[in-house]
Length: 358
Image 1 (tube, rainbow, N blue to C red):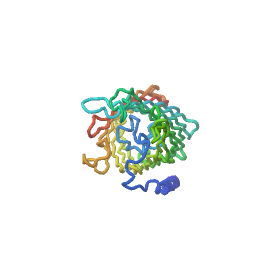
Image 2: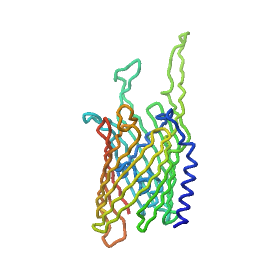
Image 3: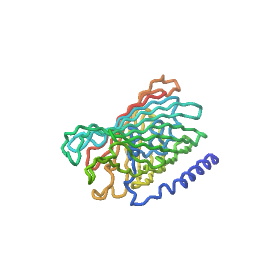
Image 4: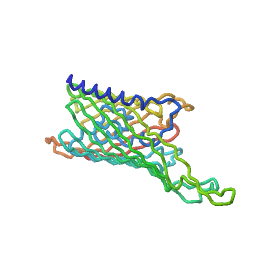
């Protein structure tokens, strides 16, 4: 146990020291990062308690919180989740949605391979220009997507780690940009029944990227009345790198196989305000799970200074359907997940997902 903890401590210190310069941002950099869709949790289960489960996340949801949690997949896990973002005032639909698909497959006794895809759409948006401000020029539909390939490994019964390689793509009909990023994370589990957990993860670390395409150019006439084409130079965009540190504890009750988990996480953002998340999850009979959480950041209660659309409150539930015989050790089952995230001036975000595992 002591040796395992030393390994965890060494890896954690290396990650912290390695990211010190990356996260040494200042207030002048706030809001200047690109690809901020990477900071949206598309998975219904973990979103229900504010992604506070950095230390205890399990399965496909680990693609967002801490990729080390992917190592806890049994033999196979398949997850789909849909999120409707910010439904809008007076019940209007914003048109923004996120679809996420994840697959995990155990390759070895201690190794799991994972594939994930997140696609974000905004519906059809009217094309307007300075010369033609009326919406009579047709529509366009932006598309944001990131593809993930991950590997997670259980080094010991207590220490688990993972690495996720992702390709980010953003495009409209005439402008596009792409980037490459890396996630890494570790989890440490201890206690007589593995009830105490620690976790740390680094997300969205990678080089800057820029945009290109015909939409970056324009045509004009020079003084000699000749048609000229000029191109705007795209500034480089940094990725929204962040560091997550979390802890959780499970209270176990034999009656009706109840569990009560308390989790807390701190997120240090390079280009946004830091977040503090606290979540609670209650499970009954391994069939019904209820969760809620709160994500706090500086000035979140001040409407004039708040810099996030979310006001911090979130909640969710899961219903699990076992598909194996009662006397079997198989974990085959199907679960349905729902989560809600409250917004300050909008109607909130709803996520619905389903997971099949065996």
